Each structure stands twice: as C-alpha cells, then as structure tokens.
Image 1 (cartoon, rainbow, N blue to C red):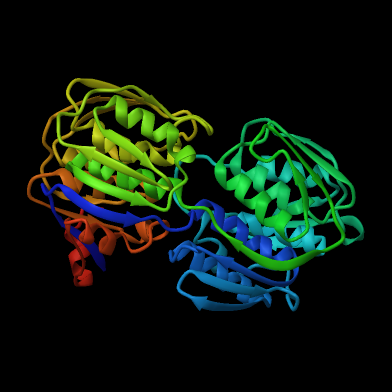
Image 2 (tube, rainbow, N blue to C red):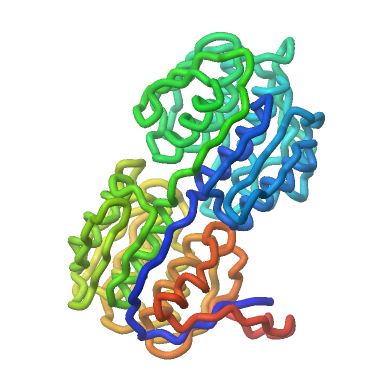
Length: 430
C-alpha cells in the first residue's frame, strides 16, 4: 500500500507546468480508433487512466508506440476486435468512449458499463439514446452493453440531450464522425475538452461544426486520415494548483495553461482574496493575506466546474466566515466531508448543499482519498494543515494527476509517497 505523507504549513513558491488535459485525452485516444492511419498525439498526460485506455486499445489490435514521455503514436488500421475486456474497462469511467468509437468505426461494439469514481448515479442513457437515434440496436445484458448498427454503419440523425452531458456529447460526436449523413446534437455541453475532441477529429478529416456551443453538427465522412495533434492543457490540474497556493499561501507561476479556460476558477479565487495575474500562457497566483468567505455553485461550462468543487471546499474551510457550496451536477460529491472533519473543519452537508464555517487552521490527520478530486482536495488541505497528514487510497489521485508529488516538492511542499506494509491497512483512514 502506498500513501501520501504531507508535513503541512509551508507556503508554496516557484513554477509548475501543467500537463495535458485528462478529460480530453481519455476521449481523443479512443478517437484514434476511427482513423485509417497513424495518429501522433502530443501532450498526453502520464496518468493511470491514459495507461488503461492504451492497454485496452492494444488489446483491440491497435499499435501503440511512445515517442517520448508525452507523445504517442497510434496505428488503428489493424484493429480487429470490437469487444472490450471486462476487467480493464471496469476500472475507468472513460471506457464508455470506446462504445462510440467502435460503433462509429465498425458498426458494432461490446463494452462493459463504465467504472471509475463513485459520484452517485451517473447513467449513460443519453449516450445510448444518441446511438439509438443513429440506428444502433442496443442491448444491455450479462454485464455488457451490446450495440449494433444495421449494415455496420450508423446514419446521421438529430439528437436532443435531455440533460447537458459532457460524456454523451463527446460519445455521440465519436459515433457520428463516420456516420452516413448529418448528426445534429442539441443541448450539447460546451466544455473545453469537447472543443479539443472536435479539433482533433477535424484535423484528421472529420466535418464537425459548433463545438463549444449548445448545437454541434457532425457531417459524417467516409474515412479519417492520420496526422498530428497536441492535447490542450488540463484546466482542472491548473485549478488544483491554484487552490493549493490559496490554501497554503505563497506565490507560484502556473505555466502551460489557456487563461480563458481558467476564468470561472480565477474569478472565484479572487473573490476569496487570492491575487491572480495573467502572463501569456501562464498565471501568477499569490496569497499572503486572509481568505474571505464565498458562495460557490458548480455548473456546466463556463460555470464553476464540478471537478474543482472538493478543492475549493478545502480553501473555504480556511476562510473567514461561513460559505455555502452547492453541487449542481452530481449527487454524491460530498463524501470527503468526513475526511475534512478529521482535520478540524466545520462542514455540514444537506443534500447538494454544504455549509462551511471557516476555522482558520486545519490539523494534520490520517484521511482517505474517496475519489479522484476528493483526493486532490485532501492534498490541498494537507498542504495548509499544521502537523502531518497521511492520505490513503492514492490510486484515485494518480488517475488524473501527473507527478503530483514531484511537482509539489519542487514548489517547496514537504510531501512524499510512502510505501507501507499491507497490514497497516487495518489502521488506515479508509
């Protein structure tokens, strides 16, 4: 068992470079299954979700070769399988993108329901609704989703999403790229990684318009060709380091970001008393004074992202006054509240609303990373806390953060990954 051990109370100083966006990479890599030729994909984050996606693609017959640590070449011309292994797919949420990619390429797919973090009920009914509208016959049985298009090719169709869904928007785009005719996705999500997926597909010969708006039009083409593409920087990783500075104090330059993508996070942290200065493709984040209370509600982009909700909660625990945090996306995102209480936080949860009374100082404690972003929030809290914080279940964190221990260490944090005997699990926080 490996845990993170943090000796908190040290302000952060220096520079950190943001990796490629996890939420874009886990869709763009499966999109390479649609391409007849070699895709060279740059700025790929070195995280466990990416490793798992690539393992699945190799099992399907794709040739995968790393040029360097962040650049991978994928040749899917010899892919021959349309059935995804159960044990691999159940470990990550993004395995559902393989349904759209395989269905678009071969007209058939056999994929287990997705795994990943438990954030409450997260059905993929909108994904399946889109595939059905395009002519696919869907069955869910024996632990697998079976999707088959008559004649092995989908047909373009209008698709109206009942709720704004990032995953469904991207999955339907994947399926529609090689479909026969025009697919119009209405009430589409607008997140930056949706635009990134559209740009990737278009660079390979797809015909997609409107990504970043609530109406996306995908005119199917016969084939996609190989090419090169670089994934956008990770908005959530950057936001996590911004909250780390806000919580621990100090001054950090955050490099390799797209400032426009950060506006929703920047505005809220400035309201809380953090000084943020834009400098080209970097943000300089400073916090030396007191933190102020704030009310935060998560919303679809360009609103405050749900993936930043636990991290900003860690900062609000340290702010003067009482803050109200409202979760507008998922049902079960406050499981970290008990972990914060172990550290002395005053946080009460009622449904989708958390009331946080700032305490000024947290105390180090054994805590558990109950999911990816909650794990990041435990790190943010541990950096600011007095004493030692030990974080178990760090495999969740490694799903979405590249070299987080090394990056924070270079900023002056006292953090290390510590291997402990398996029997220590009995006394862990989890």
